[in-house]
Image 1 (cartoon, rainbow, N blue to C red):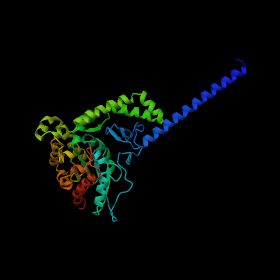
Image 2: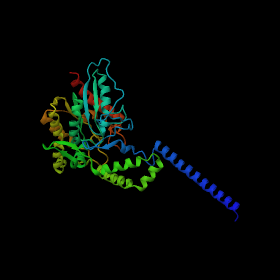
Image 3: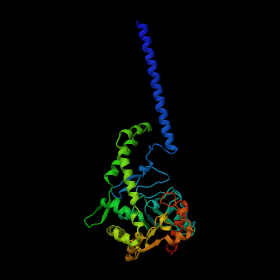
Image 4: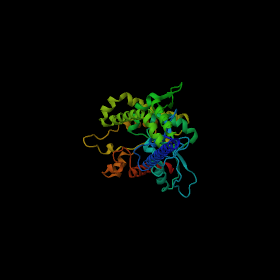
Length: 375
């Protein structure tokens, strides 16, 4: 083969290699475009980790809202307070009463206009009552976390009123998720609920994957990192937790108190410590209100399942009565408001109120608050 033929062959090989390189780049670009489009229209491969990156590990309250991003209409300040861009206020609003709202996902809510504090503010405005809501609710918060959360927020906000929503899931969260992570000072006070190492490991892995700007690289890294193993382990744990989360509530009241005697004692001590922490700031306990929303199963037992008992909130009532603190149990009011069709006020296959249910609950709470705030 002469030199001319060799050069011609080398040129042909170069053309073929260039062709395959271009096709490879086009293929990679197509995959990248597909991954970005599927992320927008309901991801088959979750590469933004929206359900995880809306929270970050915390050394004080176990997990805190991510203040660096706005996810699903939720924006928080550096103290974990929901931010509202527009609140309805009466025209003549000489002085607003600052109300700190504490709770879990029921209080956190959804987008800006579908949260309990926003709807209560809107409802009270129609009565010419002006409030400034501080919504510190976040998914899976419970009394064990409310205690250090109050110690963190009270000196900053100095609220006029504090409203704390406590429900059945809080009993489980206190005893299973947070008990082992509570830090106490020399006086035995709950000063922090730290994050578990497993959660921190998952979030560190998520941060490593999200550091890749290309979605195709994120997909590759997921396959070859320990992310899948960690997330599958966490999902299995969550599934097991969710199966047991309402175990106490499904029993008859006497059986529940007998079986969970020690756990109820611990839960009760956490509710009491909320009050103790507020006394440290000389907060007027007449301006503290424990409220409770029912789950669908409190109103209508599923097929073959009993109606939930009220043991958890009765425990809260005991603490409130011992400390002369106000309570509001919305169960009977919502039974009337739901008019025999409670299932239409909850999301299907979900423990939370739908938007109509949130409106009804907020109206019920507002009706109780209005006479107090109008004084």
